[in-house]
Length: 121
Image (tube, rainbow, N blue to C red; front, side, top):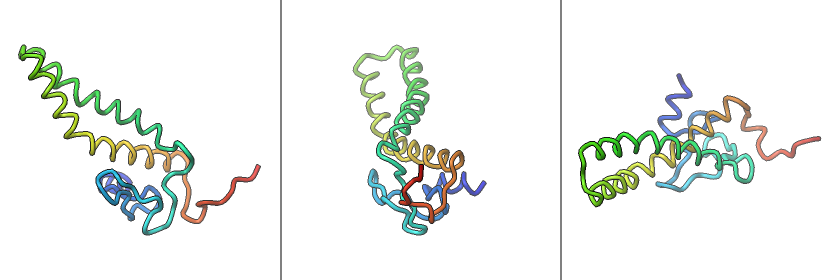
C-alpha cells in the first residue's frame, strides 16, 4: 500500500519519499532523499514508452469510438483527439516512467547504497 501511495504521489521507488520530478517533464537524476540514481542504465526509460502508448490507447479509444458513433465531422473528431492527447500527455509521461521505475524496483530491488557501484563478473 505504501508503494501505491508513493507512486501516486510521484515519489522515489527506493525510499518512497523523494520527489522524482522537478518540473513538468524534468526529472531529478538522483533521489534528493536517499541519493539513488533513477536511470539504472542508458535507455532505462525506453520501456516506459510502451506503458505510455498502451495507457494512451486505452484512454483515447473510448473517446474516438464515442465521437464515431456521434457521427461528428472529421474536424471535430481530430480536434477532440488532439486536445485530449495534449491534455493527458504530461500525466502519461510521468506515470509511465513511475510505473516502470516502481515495477522494476519490485522485480529487481536495490538500495541507495548499491548505486553507481560497478558490477562484477
